[in-house]
Image 1 (cartoon, rainbow, N blue to C red):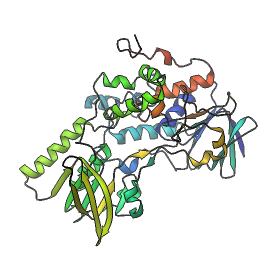
Image 2: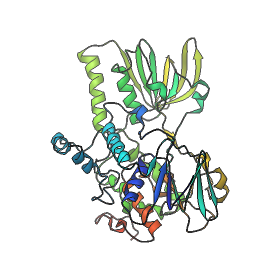
Image 3: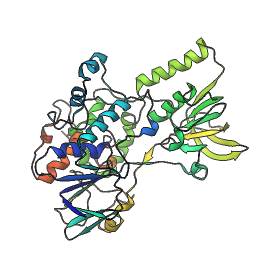
Image 4: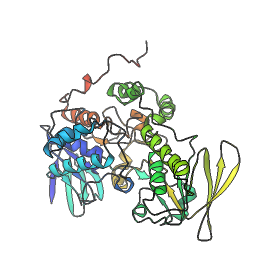
Length: 425
């Protein structure tokens, strides 16, 4: 069976869902989106009852580009009878589970655009169109948008041991975890790492003998979400950043790390209070330790468990720790999806193998100018620190649709602040 579109989205994560939600109400856009999973979910493996968003609920799928769009978070509240009760909570942010529920509601409204259970096997380009194959079905489109997400980053020291006792946090092993009487080590001091660490010593998966968190960071450092730092998450800043030479961009992104990868300050306060209560109020004998400024050197089997050798960048000493279970909260990495191999020879990459993205989020390639390969979350090095975050996803989706239409249907050029300037004098 053959279908024709002018936009096909590959992968239905939160970013392509944003694009689908805006495209559905945009005249002139005939779109379809495909994903192999059975329904929409959003990192459900690492979502806990205490997991909160780090951005306002107003930075939803569509609001930043079109507040009248029916797929906004506020309309989700109204349509589900939650508006007044939600407003009475007086919250600025929602839990990640609430945001996922909102996205699932949107995905159900868009069932005429979204094709779940349709794994894409191959993307080719023939006769002036992209051919997107899923099993025996081929859909053709003038443009595609790759939104296949990130892949778990498994450090070299752990690759030979992956299984039910050593695993990345985003894996099925976390759901079936039993730490009763076990020594648990969590590696990674970002938000996911501290959420797993906290839930572990509080007994979510049973009562462990010990819970340790090892982090290369100097401390459990807070997210910097102050007003002027949040200017990095505005269309105006992205526009200015994009125009810089690449040799300037990478150091800037590294410098801004805590604006994106820091821990929610309120969560850090709750974590500190939990440990204080355990030790000094309830006088628990449970071993709970946070070990910052440590780098993993080696992981090896030792009896029924593992021996971890770490170097302290603070004391310059080497330490060893025993673990029965090692949970890797070591983040994610960008991976070019294998399904584009038939057209990969037509795509331009930089000297580190990354996509080279244009300002309009299209990938630089040798194909016809009127046919675009757009990509979501592949341009932190090009568009800046906001690229992996939900903060600007509505604006980015609007930018892509404007480019497809060849006109400013969404007023993206008006999204500028009036008192902070990064322009040269």
